[in-house]
Image (cartoon, rainbow, N blue to C red; front, side, top):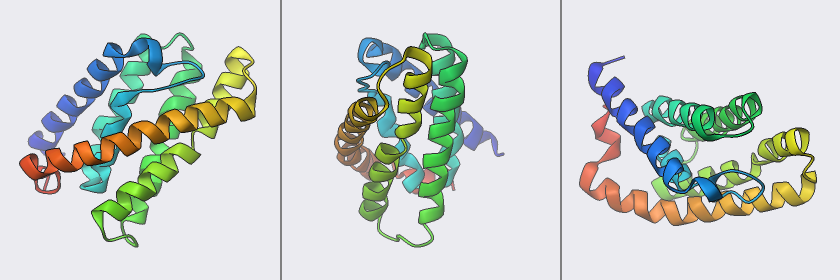
Length: 162
């Protein structure tokens, strides 16, 4: 991995952690509104952002989650699966907006893994929990898409890690 890629992914991971910490009370539990999840859209521009997002999720969950190993397995696993599906989809979905919409749907759908986690760890009802965490994820990803697109006009995420 190039030094530039490593440094930018380190910064991305740090940003994910800081944004998660800033909104910690609403970033965990059955109603999640984790604003840092908007960084998931970066893989739409370049798959190399995968590492920064995953490391950010891992460290945020390690340091701030009260669910410990559950959140490391389910939370990080959900991110890896959803990001991987989005990266794979880029072979078929060529438009950035199309990939962002697909990414939003995939992340919202795969929140069933977080619902399983919360069911196992805290006894939360699966279906209601899946609905609430998926809605929170959907809202963050929908709000995040135009923000990331606006940042892209200034930063050019695709070429930043080329």
